Length: 435
Picture 1 (tube, one colour):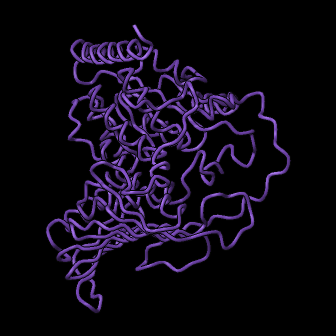
Picture 2: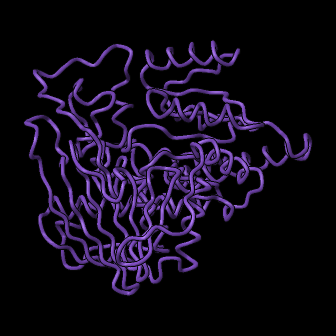
Picture 3: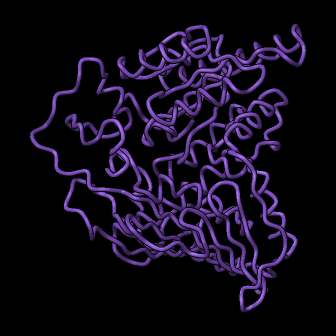
């Protein structure tokens, strides 16, 4: 038996066993059985994932996983002090997938690990909550969708806007025609991003960090403190700039509000570095446009890095334009609507609390019911919202307007741009063509 066929067989078997295990517990213990969770990546966003699981009824955080032992120990100590017990600490996420006592995992690693961590989890029979962006490139996003479907896994994308009662109400207004025919959405990411300076000579990775494992699917680079643990966002090898960082909340909102479940047919982007002479590779400022000719709709998206004015009161958010007015999404939990050419405010304003807890609760409800249609942010939305950001970055990097086939998910007559839809993977951390 070939290694690929063996891996496929073992992965499918693991998925069957894990599903049967959870079903058996449900039968034996009733609908309130405890779901055991592992959090993968606990330095930054992982802290929110820990809070999300511990705040959800019927969930026990059993494992914390991070390739940096220093970070892992700090989080384990903090967890024990706060919650009165100590989860198991694991440095290699592959060991988490081998465990039959883990039902769900959340992925809060850097971007370049999101898709492969999700695919491996699906193959091992685990349900997944994956942080945005769901993928590091377009190819990975499609493979995530394939894996979730093949192994019948519940995969929730970490765009908590979709669990905000206020924002869901706003989308309902868009669907019912409050601002008429909605023809354009604008996404805004105005964040204060300072210089990261210049790295000096290459640093030596600390003894507590498994640098090979941290890099995973990315091409191997020398360790640098300019990358670990946050500024990887601004390096193409690991991150996707702010359009693929904060921006995925808003790319997702644009698509959701317009009712689009596809990628665009035409993309143009311009931007650059205007403020800082530093080691960032991604643009500080990025303005991009996406056309959906079959739907007769478009999306505009802008990233600004410094002191700037809000638009319609929103600095991080969205504006939807219709034939009868416009609607503004402000942050994660508030909206306003305006009708008429003079911007007369009408209709309700909506605001509610932080939707993160609701997003985790929605994920766990779907894990229990096995109803993926009940998910607020299913795996397909992860692919499209992340993919929109990736296409904007590709257009910026090649410096020209791009034509894209949203069915084949390939550029039309552009091999240079096509090469950026995927990456060269570093064994054994390879996103497979066949999941």
